Length: 321
Image (cartoon, rainbow, N blue to C red):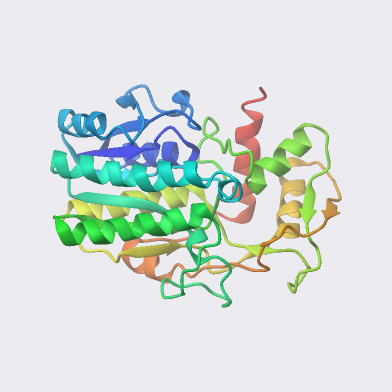
């Protein structure tokens, strides 16, 4: 059985590819390397450098490698920047998904696990987000991910398609030192890069209605996330049924100040973060229940906050350049 992983040279995608390899499932990677890194893909994994918008090339790859299922992670993932780049975001995330589904239909591949996002919820008014919580995305990125879910739903009504969408919350850490988060916008890389460069990390807003005044978010280790993709794909490959969407969350939030304390402990660098004004649109708290994913995907938090921070720091230390 071979699984095609779009975006498999990215931070999350490369972890998913490694997890499939450890589970004994063959992969082929499609990535345009716009944000992914070629060295993130193991040498023994077939790699096609192309955009998912080129459905003819993608369909040909599926046929040549006898692909039976797809894990779709490729896309433009910067929610904040998507406000300034809405057309690019929709092109990559909506048109890209349309092209991928067209390629799948042509190659007669009828199983897909879709990388969705907590951004589909916007600013929820509940303490614990479930799959039944209303969706209200507040950025082109969040909207594009919700549209991706709709595309899978509607395509499944028109032709055979077995699918599920995994809504990620804040993905952090590293499973192995040679894979690391390269995003210029995520909290962990921002804090770690500040320390590496001798700068003081910054907290945006310390006057929220939370226990310590800083935003509370849901953080999950990338290795746990990757394992959930393996289970989801295996279930579909075996003919099993899955829910249309699953939250991959911890059920227990961590504040930004707690992250800073954990970073100081893991790195051995003592610092007092600077306090900056709130960023517009940042909700005080977003935490998700992972109960449905635990029931169907064996989802569990196998890594502690210390594991998340320490592994991210070790991976950055392994790449001093």
